[in-house]
Length: 120
Image 1: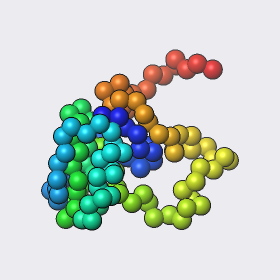
Image 2: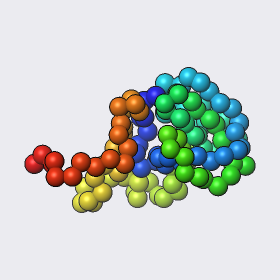
Image 3: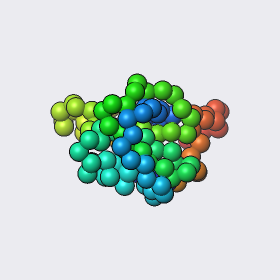
């Protein structure tokens, strides 16, 4: 599954149990899963498992979020801040906040740092 949604919208290693409306397998990208959700009136978020290309549309009756390795969650509505607050700020030090990750999920190492190996 291609992770092609802005990084600041993604909750990594997060599942929201129950409240499932429908499960779709296989799904090729996170954006296509999100599109399915936006076309379903009862859908408020998606929970995806990229390793098996699974997309679950969730209704508002889902439970509180829990940590679950390999899961990705995205709310249908990005945070409710005004548009001016969602635009990248050239003076900000928050690099990558609006970055789109378009690399297949199986090629990404999550929560991994390689200290002292930086290229300047």
